[in-house]
Length: 321
Image (cartoon, rainbow, N blue to C red; front, side):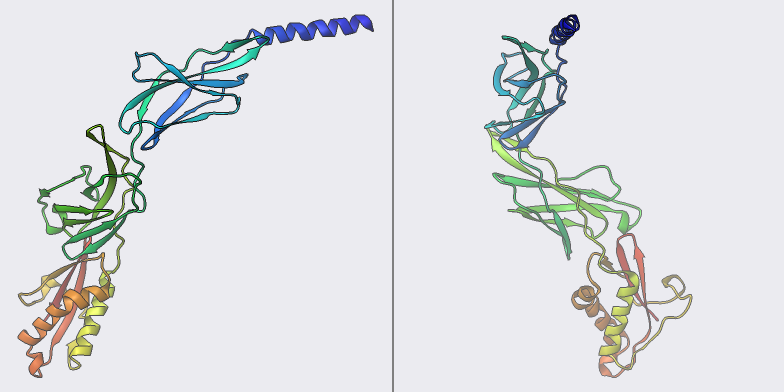
């Protein structure tokens, strides 16, 4: 029995000595990214057998690295470096360690990776179509000195940050970006009324230069009205204002096989409600046509049918005789 015990103790001692001699794997420094305008966050994969990690930082990849943190947690895989200068690049590397008797055993250093602190990503970007373009608004970014708006037509690869014009085969396919006026956390962007998308980023001025944050998620206005809804709203307007109107939809009748007056067609954005389009824009044109061409204000009887067609993101309206 005594011989067996000695043998087991010896086996355990040999095994422990062998485990102590196994080198630690070099940490895989996965990401070094800006966390906000004054913080940089490092993440790595935990190393098997490690009891902690050391984090080093330098002003350049070839300058001297200084240890900035000792993390006594084998399960840790993240460190946030605070107090960084916005826009200035910093370089990092990490190594693992464990205790072996009276000495500390280290792994090789990870690869060196760099990043700079910058403003956080703009959030909650919303867009709304107005008569001369789009109104944008978003949540403020702490410490931001200003913001930049980028716009493109849906399906286009290029983003534009100022005046741009590219004629298309039709009005709906023409790309137009006019004045972009930013005030605080809102902006007015002058564009056509078709499929435009937007994104916004913040900037801070640090050491004499602009440091840009990440762009927001892409935002685009949501469709508010369909061709059928706008047609119904226009017909209701005519019937209420001119009770003797003879409006009807004739099967198969389109602008191509019918006649209409010189004020038609009218084009509207589908990003507005039918009520707003009729109240602020279309209603005035309906009145003009009824009173000047059908003499409705003097008792004449407007007749015909309203025709609405959806073209890209626009709604074209005709009053067909």
